[in-house]
Amino acid sequence: MKRTLSDYPNLQRQRQQLLQQLSGLQELRRGSLTDQFLMVKRKDGSRVKRGPYPLLTRKQGAKTVSRRLTDSALVPLYRQQIQALRQFETVGDGLVRVGEQLSDLAVAEVGQKKLLVELEQAAEVRRLAAALAARQTPDFEAWESLLLQAARQGGAGVLGTLLSHGQQYAPREVILCPCGQRMRSRGRRSKGLLTTLGRVPFARSFYQCPPCSQGCFPDDERLDIVPTTYAPGVRRLLARAGSQSHFAQAAEDLRCYAGLTVEAREIERVAEAVGRQVEQWLSAQQERILQALGTSVPTAVSEATFYIRFDGTGVPVRKSELVGRRGKQADGSARTREAKLGCVFTQVGLDQEGYPQRDPHSTT
Ligand SMILES: [Zn+2]
Image (cartoon, rainbow, N blue to C red):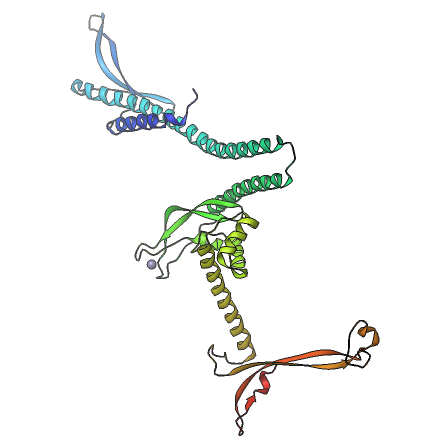
């Protein structure tokens, strides 16, 4: 019989009933009880049937072993215990039968869910494609955006599978709490990720430290999505769009170019967070370079005044470089072209006459 998900509660109920029956069975005995009759020879040579004697018979390996029960008062108890084992076997079979049906349902459920999602998406794409194809004039751009949408949906599905595959088959390492204790797995927690392909659900393991109850998500750390629900690709886009224009404009651009719907204030938040990370990275790099050179790290706040100066001067060039250039000569022709030279430097103090003094090592 083909079972559907609606059978699930009924099967669960059956299982509970069987388990209850099982817990009521305590004294169990293998074997069976039979009545034994013996033919006994009397003194006068005649034979007489004696019995019945109750006999407990059971298999032991390949042999069958029998034992006579001498106390007939115990026979009903033996019978009860043997009967209980029969019940135990029946209930056990019932549990296996229900378990197999539940197994089939679980397998079917996974397949059904996946199929439903895929069918829904495919049906939507087909519906739109049919509507577009029915038009008198072809709409190239509509085809493009429709297929892009279909490709994104498919890609988001694959991305979700990759994430859950990685989560299931990643080697389980020991996670240590900052307090030094070993953290324990506390099951999975879900979060929705916004990726460049669309929304993708992600269920990852949560670890907690029993003594200090600090928690962490090791998979989030591995995937670089610790305090955020934006995938790395989306964060790059948000930071870039946010750095190019007003955040409202950035939201508009992202919708248009990447099909992403993100509020302006979210873009602001992510762009600023990424900006802070870049700043930290840059100053760490700078520190590393300066340490390698044996120079001390300059403090962020400096008393120095920073100058940028430039000037231009005429440089004689070949005639071929002067074609079409107006110059200062009487006939309007030119003999030189202007080259601009600039430098940046800091001021270290003032000289005796009160003029600023340039730090010669700072000039670039
Ligand atoms: Zn701890």
